[in-house]
Length: 375
Length: 161
Image 1 (tube, chains in turn yellow, brown):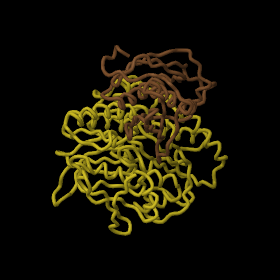
Image 2 (image 1 turned 45 degrees about the vertical axis):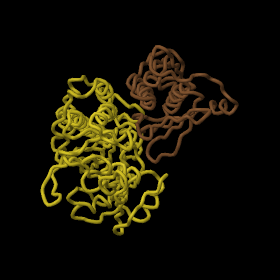
Image 3 (image 1 turned 90 degrees about the vertical axis):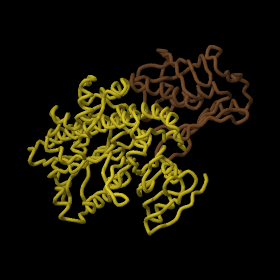
Image 4 (image 1 turned 120 degrees about the horizontal axis):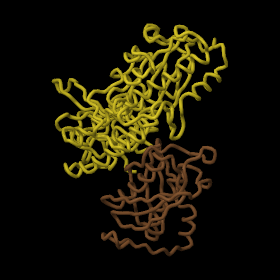
C-alpha cells in the first residue's frame, strides 16, 4: 500500500496534505495511539479519496473511530458546496440512518426483583433479531410503507408504538422532510415490507446497561440518568429497505458519474451533482430510508417497553421508560453554516457521527462517560 | 456464448495440478476491518463467475444442508466485466434475501463481458434444517477487481456485512 504523507497539526489533529487529485487536505482527529492503528489499514487512503470529490469544502475529515470502510472510511465526514458539490450514496452507506437510541428508566440495576436473564429473554422474544429477521409487526403494504417513508417515527406513534412525547428526544423529531417515495424501487419496498420493528444482525444490538460513573451530575440529571441506573441502548437502521435504496442509487450514480464526467478514485464513491436530477432523487430516497429507520427504532423501543412491563409487572410511572436521544450515524443532510465569513448551505455526508460513534458505544462504560461529558 | 454478440471470452478448461488444488479451495477471505473481503480463483472467467457465486452461497449458509429443489434463471447485463460480476452476485443476493431462499449451485449458460445468462438451484430457507452464517447487506463496488494471473483468474470484492 502506498504511504501517504501525514503531518501532525496538534496533539490530536493530523493532516494529509494536498496531493495529486485531492481538492482539499484530509483532517484526522486522533491521538498518537489511535494513529498507530489507523496507519495499518487503508482508511487514510480513503480520506484522500473523498478529498477528490467535486465541491468538497474545507477538509475531508475523519473522526477518532476512523477505520477501513468501503468508499468513505468509517468515521468519515465531508461537507459539499450546495451548488458545485456532489452527493454519493456509497458515502452514506448501505444502512441509511443506522443509529443509536439510548433509553432511560427509573430502575436501579442492582435492585431488580427478577433475574436479568428473564428481561433479556422477554426482549429477545419480542424483537426479531438475527439474519434476515422479519415479522415483528404485520407485513406492510406499499401504501403503508410510503407513509412510513414520509412520516418516520410519527407513523409508529400513530400506530400505537410509543408516545408522542418521545419525538422530542429523536434527531429531527424522527422525520426528515422532503422524502420522496416515488423514486424508490419496488425491490426496496419488497425488502422493507416485513422488516419494520426488527433488529437485524452484524453489529446491531439491544443492550441492557448499568450507569457506573457520573462525571457531570447536572447534565446527567437533565438526561434522567443516575448512578446505578438501568438503561438500554438500541443500535439498528433502515434494514433491507435502506440497503436496497443504496444499491439502486449507486447504480444510477455510476451512470451519472460518467454523464457529468466526474473522476472518482473508487467506484464505491459514485456520485451525482447535488443539483442534478440523479442527486435530488437520491436525496429524496435517502430521506425516506432515514424515516424508515426512525420508525424502526421507535417500534423496537415500544416492543422493548412492552416486554419490560410484562416481565416486571410494574406501573408505567415506576418504570419511567423514555428515550434520552436517538441519533443517526450514516446520513446526508443539508445544513446552514458559517464558512469563509458568510452563511451558506452545505450538504454533509457522515458515515459515523462524531459523538455517539459505534466503537465508543461498544465500550459501554466509556460511552456513558463520553455522553455525559458532551452534554 | 455466441448469442451475446460482444466479445467471446476464452472458456477452455484445462486444469493443471495446481489449478485443481486451487479449485478445491476456490476462494479465501482477505482481511478487511469492518466488512468481508473475498478473493476468488477460477481457471477461466466463466469458472471465476461460478466460483464467485459459490463463495457467496458458502458465506451465507451451510450449503451442505441445502438441496437443489428449485432452479431460478438469471439474466444480467453491465457496462464491463467487473460490474457484471457485481451485478451477478447482487442479483443472487437480492433473490436469496427477498424470497428467503438459499442457493447451492449455479450454472452459467451464456457469458460475455457485458452479459450473463445463468441458472442457480437451491431451496427455501428452513430454520429447522439450515444454519445462516451472516447477514450480507450488499455486494459493494469497493476495490472490485478481476485480474488475469497468467494461468488463472482472480476476482476480489467486498461484501457489506
